[in-house]
Length: 310
Ligand code: TXA
Ligand code: MG
Image (cartoon, rainbow, N blue to C red; front, side, top):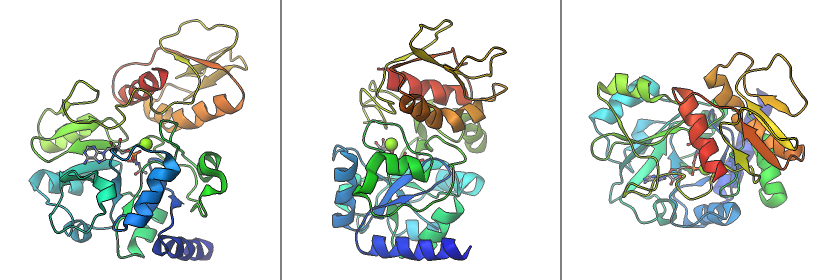
């Protein structure tokens, strides 16, 4: 515990100094900086090689702080009470008097915000008097990191400090819901659509890809990519391929990588990025993926793999 506290102090020092740090959350690790600072948020974009027109998610400790920057509404409070802190990001209207850096929003009048549940992330947010902008801590288009080591793999010594919070429990990014007008889903993620629909007592529309007018998250051609070709719905594999499975096979070969022993799709999500990283590191040049059911958390896995395979 003592060690955690001194690391948090260290993290605060870097953040106060307008530096970026690696931050553990329950979904994936973030590349964190002071969301009110132009200087600090600018560094996020250059480190990630992220296009400046792709806005960032801002992380808060409590609603009272959020209210300085965003308009809240009934649907927000319903979902906040049910699921926060947790793996959900809300798009809300930005207040005119908000101090959020223009770099964060790409001059939009909306803001993506979330309340991470990871104990270390919460402790950090509690120790500072500004919110934290944090996209996933990977170079643009590559796989999100789920451990301190993954973050170091991405940035090496280009970032000065990464807080260690162990393996991310959820392992994929937060679900994004826009509450600006009629609620709609913009990204599938760690919280299921059915849970959200139940709470809001309505069917939610899903806007995931380029065919909508809004610029949706992760809609660039390539995303979440391990940097090697991915072939979906493969019931057989070729010699040089790694085989990504959702269930342990009776006969496991050395090029077989299962995401869950017993086909638990939530567990598959948790292990997805970690396994893709492992396959890449082992030197495989191609990945074949077993058919994954298009339901529940299977939807999230298919979404990420299809984008990665483009
Ligand atoms: O789980 C997560 O959400 C992680 C952790 C670190 O919190 N963060 C994350 O951030 O996944 P990032 O930047 O990798 O993905 C955020 C997505 C981006 O694709 C961006 O386009 C979208 O959110 N976004 C940000 N602001 C938005 C806005 N105002 N309207 C619509 N989409 C927005
Ligand atoms: Mg990302």
